[in-house]
Length: 125
Length: 462
Image (cartoon, rainbow over all chains, first blue to last red; front, side, top):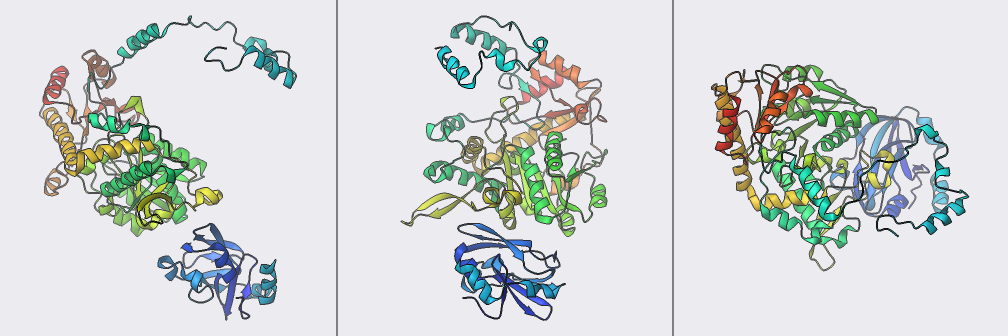
């Protein structure tokens, strides 16, 4: 459950890049650890974030966890589906459960993130 | 061993030996001798019978709202409390319950709080209420804290005719959070919040604006357009309310306000020399994650039966304190219960009746004074009163609710002293909070005062 085409942060966010745009969500491992997600607090579109800045909160029946943005940039879109159906994060963490899209100001930051193998090793520990 | 001293001499000896001190006095050796108290001059102990006599005699020196006609309001109100309220609240199942710490075991208490929340929502016309806060003042401060967190802005605008002590508490909270509170002046002609001053102050750093539905001068403010103006600016709209007045007035939620805060003491709780109060806070659904304190929810157990739980518990104040909008984890369980019992006994029509009685009686006294029943006394803020318009609004038949301001020929402080001799508790001398309002007197009339009380009072002013 660690797709090859994505990059990962140590805080269990995934990043998919398409040109300058990075789509960000949390991994299958993260949603599994959290349990049923009941609420996602999203940032405002237009907010400027620096790498590893917290941008929101994901709340499950067990706990509340801060979301960190793995790359620097400006929020261009938030997944408003999550406001009504936060459980989408559990069912489709890598697809419909994406959280935000960011226009990257330093696209090279992506190279510093974990690749699928490194992330798979991280969650094995 | 004495009943009131838990330590025997032997206990003390052992404790001193353990810490290596020779006497209790030695522990205070750092305090200079001349600063220490020697020979405490207190009377000899007396028996319980003597004590009760002494305390009763002392208490009789107070002018009690039970035995006197009370014209003092200004935040704490002498409303009638049906005997059944106390009887039900004093049941041991309720009376011993503090805010529940092993909540789900106290289903009765949780149900009572759930019903309290339901009443708070019905009264305010908003979606969610918490289990209550300490008093109206802290409820306002918590609402401001929600606004700072929700909007990321750092300034609250508050009307200068919101209760002065509430504003003081708001400023204390804001100072600790490194935030700003700015006051909007009132219009000296009308005694209501200056809406032009509000518009000028409404900049993009404003997190919220707090406006009174019934202001400190007793005037019902026209808030019909205010919420929209505030929200257009991206700020939250907070209304302060008097719960009794909501028997007649349009609920703040229906006027478009995001948050409503009020002092719930009026709902069946005695004045008790000023406290405890009951902080009421209600909000629109989208703010539920920001509501401080506890919230009781209704659900079903594994047998499918209705039950109650503390809900939204995995929230910031418990596990992410550094991010929390508030760290309050308590509520005013007994006062909230009292309000619930009071409201359930009165019902919708009963509350409306109480509100009407306050409104009509206060206006009776006010009109008498306006007509010159007491020479030298004049109504303040009578200019520009929207009387005609109010007559059309079915739920707001008059611009004052149960309090109004009178300009006296001399100091109301001296007047209050004279009235006290006649077994009357006079109004508030407003100069204490508003230095510009010299000789201005804030009078309150609730349903407990009869026409005879009001006429007697007028007679004494002549």
